[in-house]
Image 1 (cartoon, rainbow, N blue to C red):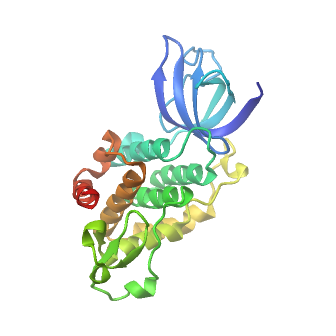
Image 2 (cartoon, rainbow, N blue to C red):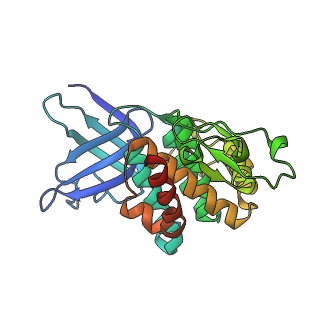
Amino acid sequence: MPRWKDQAIVLRRWPWSETSQTALLLTREHGLSRGLAKGALRERGAFSGGFELLVRGEIVAIDRPSSDLALFVEWDAQRIVRAPRRALDAHHAALYLADLASRCVAVGDPHPGLFAALVRALEAMERGLAPVAAVLAAQWAALEETGRAPSLPAPEALAGSARRWAINPETGSISLLETVEDRRRVWPVRPATLHAMHAAQRAGWSVPLDASQLAPGSPFEDHTLQSSCAAVATLPPRAVQGANALLAALHLWARGEEPSAACRAFLARPLDVMRRLRRRTEG
């Protein structure tokens, strides 16, 4: 059973015994990996004192064909983002993104773009970007990476328009609400919400990261992050909130799930509206 090494972010962790843990990691080249780390909590172990949520580092693991759990051999914690530990809104945003990443792809299915989006979201919040704006860009990137991003109308079609638009959650198509024959099958969308989604698309957070950008001990340098933060930071808060609720609802629709606790903590009130729309559409 060959060992593999990869960059990873801790999405979840559970106690296994007094000194051991199990953890769910999102890795750069190996996708989601769920594994057992024996002795992870021992003071002189090979696991940096154990797995902590949202910490990025380097994992060494062995996949075991006879078990659903890989064997985690080493864990070198390299980057701890402080923003989710200092502010409640950043905490809720980061937990929601970790929950989203754990649900939108399968174990062992590599998605370097999803890993890159989560890294960028955490780093953006660390640099002062509003958590709601970071989630917007990351949610769009996750939809792109999983092939579920809606087809946005051209920006010029939205310019100066006060008309309502509609999105079909089954096909991802967006059209003017007035042209839709069966409105029970679509969700209404404001032009401002679509403008916010365009900004998230332009952010390009699903572009994979180079290994050199993740080198331990060096500051995170990323042109994509630097050029995109300003664009999403200047969006109207209401438009960002509406776009986040819509993108979250699209993720839930694709998986046939109800909102998780992490999702509700971040998007409680606007998501209630989207849930009512989902029920109407499903009915």
